[in-house]
Image (cartoon, helix red, strand yellow):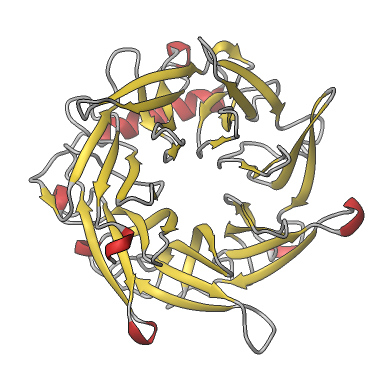
Length: 423
């Protein structure tokens, strides 16, 4: 194992040991643990949220566990299936490291699924150049892993290294995503997959075009949107757009919004497209004195009716530990316009540090009502870092990086909320 991977694995062990804390239970909405990680031959430390198929099965990734050649495990992709008795059954679909380092190490960021049930994702390290991979898992009696691309191609690593977010799948089977340096497109063809760099970040002086891009979302016209965690006009991060050009030419890159720090957000984590608006989180900023740079915000980025740059509206500032601190992952918007998300810290469990899941309901005059749906306690999970998803029938699903007795290797959870029809 090289030094970079060894450092990553050692850090994972340290983190998971630090997460073994517990406190009294405090629930605000019906909550259920679907699976606790860390048992024999299981994954450890969910490294993404979950996705849902048409049959109600959940799919996700873990950072460790599985093949133990990486020390604490090279990571897994898993499936959880609901059973008639109300329990959920876990199946490990693939253990990374089973094909050596060439199949990738440490899957993370999330998965995409096509119409035939194939799963697509990325690994942070491993592959031919030890800079991460994009992979496909195909269903069968045993799932088959195929490496679509190994990042960090020598000699200049121009395709980028260490992808960290779920790829985005379009109707033609193309995958879009980001590495720490680039936005890319992977296209299938008769002789394999072709990687095209759509944009290289930090190409402008002082990284005014952003650095460390996050997950991408796509509109009906094929435009891509995403956050850059750092960089921008004041180095507090930004939201960008990539627009395809007619004739298949170079994509046009545009900064939509620069975060300003202070009362504004700092370090945008993810965005979601709902109608013509972008909703998202910054995991710091907002002006709260409780946190060094602020404890984070929820924002709405809308088109400016007068033209020009989009208009940001701050929907909520995280300023009280009891309400959660440092939101992470994407928010999800239901059909009634309610927002759901996760704060990675704060809450009332664990002495105020295990995190919480929240709901925001739109009111009159542009106001929003914020409420905590669940406070994590350590025993039922800790550090919800990847947001939640909704099945549209009153259930939210998500993961925590740690916690969950007796193994404290993280959990997959379900929260029941009133159905959209009653809101």
